Image (cartoon, rainbow, N blue to C red):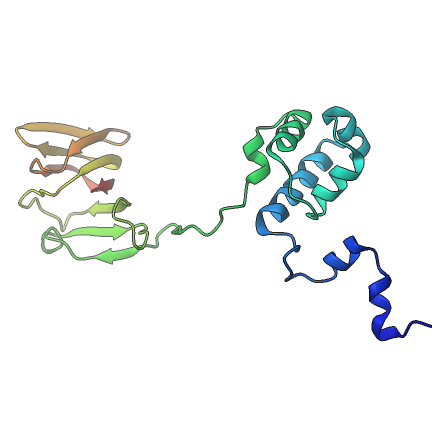
Length: 212
C-alpha cells in the first residue's frame, strides 16, 4: 500500500513537472505570454483548438500544450499559428517586454520648472520625463499671459519642436521670424538662438518638445 506522503510519485511525469512552479521545467515568462496571447486571439475568432489545429497543421494536443505554457514553441510553429489566426507573428509576443519606463500626466498637471524666462512671466510645465535616458524627449507646456514679456533667446544642443495651441506670437530662430497661431508648428536646430519675439494675442500656449 502506498502511503499518502509518497503517492505523488505515481503521477505521470508531465504532471509531476507542473506540480511545482520553480523547477527547471516550469514555464518561463515568454511561454506564459505566448500562451495568453494565443488563447486570446483564438477565442476572439471563435475557434476551437481543433479548428485551429486544422488550420495550422499542428496537433490539437500541441496547441493545448502551448496554451497552457507547458512547452516551448518553435519559430516554425509560431509562424503557423500566426498564419492560422491571420495576425503578425509579433502579436504573439505582445506583453513580453513590459518593464519600460513611462510617464502619464493628467490635464492641468505636470511639474512647474524655473527657467530663464520665468522671471519674465513665462510658465514652463514639464509634461513628463524618463529616468536614465540621455536620448529622451522633454515635452514642456509653455504659457504666456498679460504678465509675460519677451526675453533673451534660448540656445541649447539638439533639436526642438514648437506646436502652437492658442494665441498668436512672432517666434524667432536665428535670423528668421515666424508668425505662429494655433495649429502652426516649427522644428528647429536648438543651437540657433530662438524664442518668442512679439506676443500678439494673449494668452499664448504652445508645446515645446526638445531632444538632445
